[in-house]
Length: 352
Image (cartoon, rainbow, N blue to C red; front, side, top):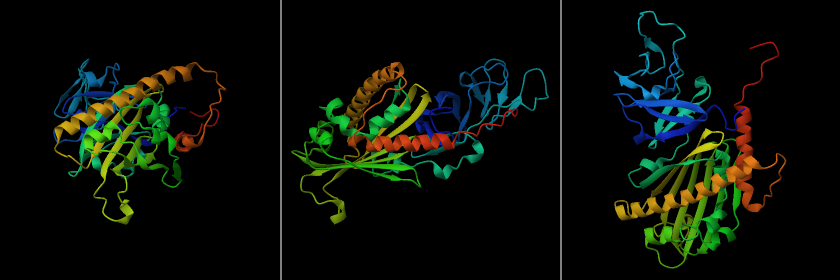
C-alpha cells in the first residue's frame, strides 16, 4: 500500500513547463509522459511503450500523436495505439494508460487512481496565481524525503524562528500560540497564528517598505494531499483588522505549495509566492523569488537529513508532540483516512 492517497488530484507541473514536446515527470511512483497538443490541451500518458517499454518521453510528436522513438508504435491522446510497424492490424491490447488532467491557476493537475472517479471540480483552487491583481514568483525544488515530512514542516511554522532567521523568521512566530480547526466534511486543516506586534523580517521589510514593527497574520489552509495555502497579512502595528473596515493598510502575500510525491522517499516541492502590491516592480519580484528559494532550500537540506534519520531509526521509535503540532497531527490523520479510502479492498482468496 503506498503512503499517499489514491484517487486524488496532484500537481504535476506548472503550465509553462509543458509545451508541444515530450516532458517526463514521475508522480506518486508513476512515470508519466506529458505533452501539449497543437490545440493547447495537456495530455498525460504512462511513460512506457507497450511493445518494449521504451520511454515515450524520449519519443516525438507527429500530428498530436506520440511516435515511440524505438520501434515507431504510435499512440493517440487516449493512449490507444493507432499504428505499428510492419502490420495494419493493431492488437486490441496495444494501449497505454492515459491519466485525466486539469489545467487551472497556472498549474497542471493529474489524477492518480481510477480514471472513472476523476472529477475536475474537485481539483483545489489557488486563483491568485494567475489573477491580474496579483504578481507571482515560483519555483520547484527536488526533495529527497517523503512528502509527509514536508507536510509536517509547513503545518508548523514555528520552525521559521530557528531555521529561517534572517529571512522570514522572528521570535514572535515561535512564541505565539496557534489555533487549529479541521473541517471533516471537506478534509481541510486550518491553522492560524495572529501576531499583533512583531518584528518585521527582511522578507517583508524589503518588499513592502514597512519600517518598525508589524501586525503579522499567518492563516494556513491545507487541502490534503497536495495543496497548501498560507494567507499572510502584513500591516503596521495598530492598523485596524479587515473585519472593521477596508484593509487598505495591509499587504497580502499568498504562499502556495504543491506537495507532490515522486516516490516513497522523494517529493516535488512546488513553491509560489503571490502578492497584491508592487505588481510591476521587477526588483521586488527578484527579491522575493531569491529569498523564498533560499528558505525552501533551507527546508530541503533539513528534510533531506531528517529522511535519513527516519529511515535509520528503530520501528517503534516514539516521537514527542506538543501544542504547535496540532495542525500537523490533524493533517496526518486526514492523510491516513484518505490513504485507507483509496486502497482497494483485498480480493477473497482464490480470486484475482
